[in-house]
Length: 282
Image (cartoon, rainbow, N blue to C red; front, top):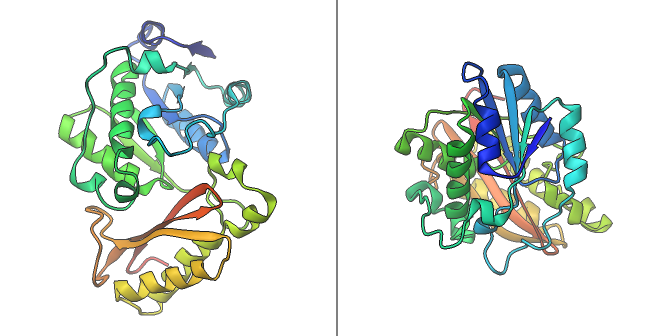
């Protein structure tokens, strides 16, 4: 497994054999089974697999948890070596954002609601760093998890609009036994908070069940989610949503499909989750 810190190192290794296909798994490190599921999917579909580990400061607002974000590079590298990853890119901030950098990639409409409304600068940082990784590594495929559903929509829009020659592969959410979506931030939950954290998944599944029982009014589905979250004293609601899965605009009535999603705070840890729903799929 080759570990590189610079763009020149990455490009030299990446192009040793231009005929071979590459899959990229972008991460912020502190890897868990959700990340590993992406690596395994990439391993099965490409000749070579690259993983990036970079806690991207551009996607954190000044008041957010950049410094508290968990890190353990040696553990991450050990896990990736076990998965037979070929290349790991571990740049520092100055590599990804050289002094006097002035260029950002901004996706407009689909980046504005949901996470974009709660974190207005977030997706500018995400799309900029992902665009840079695409340019540096030039993979044939890039692997993202469904847990960050809006991120998937935003990156797909960027790929289409800027003609990136890369296929976006979306992989299912990996959950703990109680339904909590796996996330590096879960490590920061205290024991009592960890017990409370699955409330968001319960709220989403309650709305999903109501939909398949015949409820089509989006406002009623949102209220079901809110009521479930409010029953948990340790949870603080950020938002719930019943949106068009492509435009991410809020729906009045769910006619055929929708994205149920939400964000809550447990203590100072912010958790997100989602469930896509569609007529005929149970």
